Amino acid sequence: MLRIVQRVAAVAGYLRGMAAGTRWEPERRPAELDQFVGMWVAVKDGRVVTCARNARDLVPRLHELGDQGKGAVAQYVPYPSDAVMIGVG
Image (cartoon, rainbow, N blue to C red; front, side):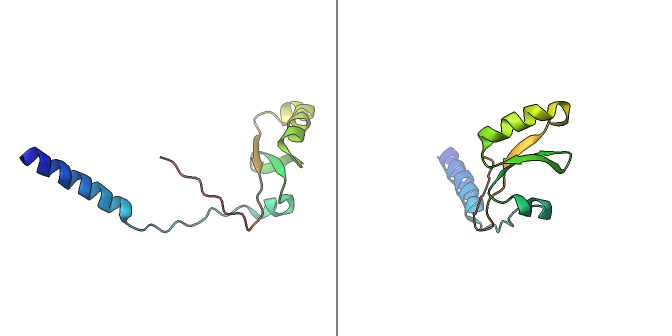
């Protein structure tokens, strides 16, 4: 019986912590990316290496750059009204 009470208490404490309202501040995009809204960009060392209207066109452009494009990260720059939330867990 004691074991059941302990389990219920543990679950109740866990759920209480989950219910606590947490306010998330959205991640702000760098001002440099404002000119690339609605496009795919390749970013390397904090600067935009190349951009394209879709991801399929971005890959050949990166290959054309050779070593300068190696290690770049491709990302979509959403419109300011698009709410994107990324969670872990």
